[in-house]
Length: 264
Image (cartoon, rainbow, N blue to C red; front, side, top):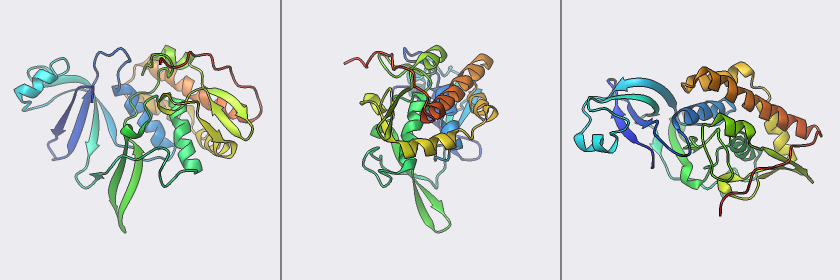
């Protein structure tokens, strides 16, 4: 992709992909991807395993590779701030899957995953960022449909999107309101028209998300290596959005969608 990454093997033989924090107009993916994956997992969806590594050293980095990652890996192999993704040998990374045409089309669970993308302001939820993981289980192989890149979260969706930007996330709009028997959001997946889901699905997801406690949400951001003010700030916005979803479904008016439409 566009972010500096390397594939590494640890002392026990486990393979990992390390993605590093880098200078970007849209913001860093490292903290965003880890926090988002924790929240998605907390609500019952499968995710890839992500961990924050504040600093470390990679041995045996080839010179050619070091040239590509010179801004994030020093000549001695040392680095700071990375997202390590675990890649067990027994798990096969299968094909991409379509967010509209899949075995779960029309289900409340798929609607819930789409609503999660809106809750987290994950603006790059598209087929190119999906994956079917084929995982060995007791009675064979289980296909697990996941969003494989959650790093474009916690910023703003419209105009020029950002990620991991507390001010943008806090000030961005979320829900347009109820229209007939559907809940309509201010934005859509992958810059598409606003997401609309059946009220029945929205109520199911609201009940599910409302079970999260402030402490649990904080844990997601703590795991990402976020600073204290970021942990507090992002956690409050997530909890406020869950409360807003519940309030709209209870009949209270939604806030007006005020963000500018995406650039053409």
